Length: 284
Length: 284
Image (cartoon, rainbow over all chains, first blue to last red; front, side):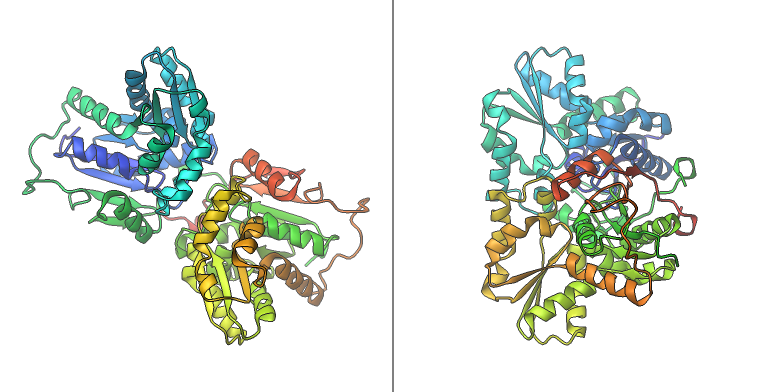
């Protein structure tokens, strides 16, 4: 494996940019290739078989593009499809469930942990299983918060509507208090302020992005795949600069607009691609 | 063409059930085949090329299943893809834009007309063009209301959140009043009460479903394709009974649950199918 290759990141759409930002901050000497599957977003209301199929297609696309490691930024794909992805590609694969769970257990210790995520992620029980596997003894309370995604995408993250929706969704966590709350969907960090305000400052919010970036660093080091020299003439990296390449499967303009809302800048290099219809996955 | 064949209806997901209901009420002696493209929903934020591709695949699937007429229940697909669909299939094709526009012009006369729809439908300008083609002289005001879709799907149609969102979206129509407001997305009739309350009772809400059903009846009569005898042993048809066949491309359980919320009953016959990857549409 060549350490000069970029790190691949895929997400069901634009939400994974929050993971891209965390990776970019932690690993400023790495280049990134991001794929947002905007033609088939969202994944959170879809079935296991469909999420697996989409995730494998995305992973194969990035592997063919040339990457040294693959980050599954989408929580739903991480919860449902990591085993299928590992079978399909040769590069190391890192999902967000394990790093997020570990960060939550570190904070909560034996206290209760809350998880908010998509319907599919909650139904998979992936976070609860991972947290239990890490030996946490507190209760794990999970809650699907589907309206948070469109609220973030439509730019209503800091609205009275978001506050009202958050009050409804997070009600369970006010009766049974949790020491840590996992933001188990890449869109949720965008609503961080409203979520924190609603659940109360004594609950620590866990954004899997930062924990995942730490794991990626560790794996790169172990495999001697880290790129440590500054990149080309760049003294300081900027988010979305021309060392990173962004692909979307549809609606590039909309992606650029939402990226600007999420990151403060739109991708320098943004390309629309079609990735479906791999023969081995297709059915008639 | 055989008049005993069912009428095909497709939608990006579950929203088209409001059109199915209108057709069912108007044409109780017809059978229906419904396809909800739940693996790729929503269409309203996707591009022209992608919506066309999905719409053509759905139409070919229903034609292969055997139908005498195709109703495009999805406003986004109707606005963007009807020409492509007509090239791809042999059966008569009826979208919802023209019937909905006509119903609005009949109500509004020379007064202003409002249209609320998805981002893609608003950007296409399909309603404004159709209303102008019908000779209406008033202004046409269009507004995308993306959050209405998840609010309807998640069962928040009659909530304070929906009322707050509606107040924001419909603000333009309170400064420039409209005589008729087209509910230009199949999900919006689910929020009819909140929308009507917010915009005021003097504005008539236009649900394309009923207008489309009237058009379908007319076309069937002209082509001598109407089925007038009662169906089998059925004295009275029920919504979702076993004379109608429902297909989804993913997550059948979730569809059944939302169908029950929309129609009061879940489909008797509901089948999950895979329809993508037609060779002639596929790219590598």
